[in-house]
Structures are given as structure tokens and as C-alpha cells.
Image (cartoon, rainbow, N blue to C red; front, side, top):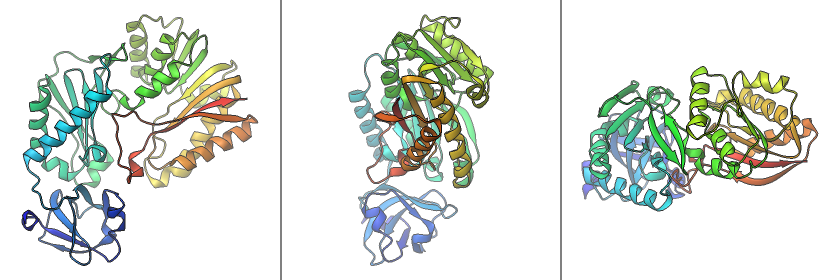
Length: 396
């Protein structure tokens, strides 16, 4: 059998249950024995306590998540062709779900596409990749070769940074893997709207592709509305609302660079920043002090909770911004509120919003539960993959 070529980990009795339910991780405390001295990022076969193979995946003895599933078919070899076929499958799915008016989307969404620790975002002919696991780092050449073969991009830029890499024993890495920086920000279109993406200096890979579907929904509710877009970043929600016929959109962000980009994106789509002002400000302070009311308020903050230790403080932050927003919505107004914090689950987020509504003395109706678009697939057994959660709420 091919698995004889791989080191092995054996799970403690009963600890295979999560894998059998479709969860793609095994934590270090569930492992009873390791055979073959695998190093960080090596591929191993996971077996139950009776010695039955369960899955092939990446192993890392340094981290809490010690095993990440690649496939439950433990009789195959993880070869370059394995990765080529997975990327081919991911491309085929995006061809079905991305419309012709959009050339920016997520091609690889980590576990959701069978690539634990890999993100690949497409910006026209530029690919931006982010690697966060030692296993995917060891497979990088095969991944890049397959991407070039499938998509023939002009540019591939690696944007691999952050706490996850440090935990995996990796250094941060940002560099061009193909092409070079000759053109600055790349121009993209999303549902026919035009945006410029700074894939080098911007947040994440430069643009929040996960909000595409939500931008459509919220833009469609903007006709004749006075809109406040908080934590606006480069103004994508603002452009959609202006295109949806909003009378006025006010965009707030603390970053001077982001505010400049937001003004540029509004102008790129034919909207004046005099009619739709962009304000460089601290959103918390602005919300506490503002006097005007709005028909629609968007709250799309950065992740307030990056670790479990941050949850209590983050919860207070989410409550504060939602409370102040609810106080400044007209009767019948709409609040679109989001959290992208992995450690704030949907139940907790809903409780925070209900607490804010109670303190603001308003009633809420849920119009829609919001999440990332279909180019961000998740596994049914992996709730951690659903990091973006949102509520579209009517206020009375």
C-alpha cells in the first residue's frame, strides 16, 4: 500500500470521532503515538487506536492543530498531479459561480477546497497567495506550478504573514513568485463596478472578496437612502450603495491610505466624494458623537478577537458600535452588521446584537443572515471555516 511510505500517527481510543464527522483537524492531545519521526509539514497517515487508516494529512508536532486532513483516501500518494487535479476542480467550480462582470474572486479557500493553510485570490491576471501552514509551505512549488499551468497568470505574489505562520514555525514571506511590480495596484471589476487593489500594501490580499454577495444585497437596499459605511476600508460597500441610488454615502475609516483609496474607487465608478464624503476618523468616536440619523448603516469592522483571550474585550467593542449605530437609525432603518472574528461564533454575535438592541430600546427583525460568498466554500464538518458572519436587520 502507498501509505507504507508515510509516517504514521495513532489516535487515542475514541478520538477519531471528529474526523469521522468530517472535521479536518486533529489536536495534539488526541495523538497516542507517532511512528517514523515526521517533521513539521510532513505528510502522515492518521490511524485509529485499532490501526485502521483514517486519512492522509499534514503533521506538525509544534502546534495544537497537529494534523490537517488532505484526503480520507489513505491509499494514494500526494503527488504534483494530486495538487493539479485539486486546482483544476477549484477552477471548474469558480467558472460556474463567478459571473462575466467579475474578474476578482477567491480560487482556493484553504480547507474548503482541500488545501489546508492555502489562500489563492484572483485579481484579473494577478494571483495573490497566502500560506499559513508548514505542510503547504513544503508543497509550494507544486502549487505554483499547477497554478501557472491552469491559469497562466501574469503575476503571482506571495503575501504570507501573520500569527499562524509563527505558530507553525515559519517566517513571514512577501515576494513576487512570477512577474514583478511594474503596474502598482491592479484594476479589477466586480459585478461591473471598478476597483483598484493594492495587493502588496493592502489588508489581507488587498480586497475583501468574501463580501461580494453581501455588497450586492446591501447595494440593492440603498435607493434614496442616507447611508453610513463604518470601517469602510477602500470603499467597496460605498461604491455599491452609490450605484444602488443612495442619496448620500458617508464612509468612515481611520486609515488615511484607505480613505484615499475609497475616494479613488468612488471616482472610478463616477461618484463624487463631495456628494459621498470619505472621512478619516476613529469610528468609535464618530459614532458616539454623531447627531444625524441614517436609513442604512454598515458595520464591517476588522477582527476584534484574534485569540480566545480577546473575546471579552471584542464583545464589548462589537456591542458598543452596534449600540451607537442602532441609536442613529431612523424608524424602519436597516443595519448590516458583521464580525470576521473566528473566536466570535454566530450565537455569541447574535447575543451581542440583542444586548445592544435592548440597551438602545429598539426592536429588531432579521431580514437575512449573511456570510461569505460561494467562492469561499467550507466543509460541512468544519464550522471554524465560517469565519464571516453577519446580520441584516430591520429596526423599529
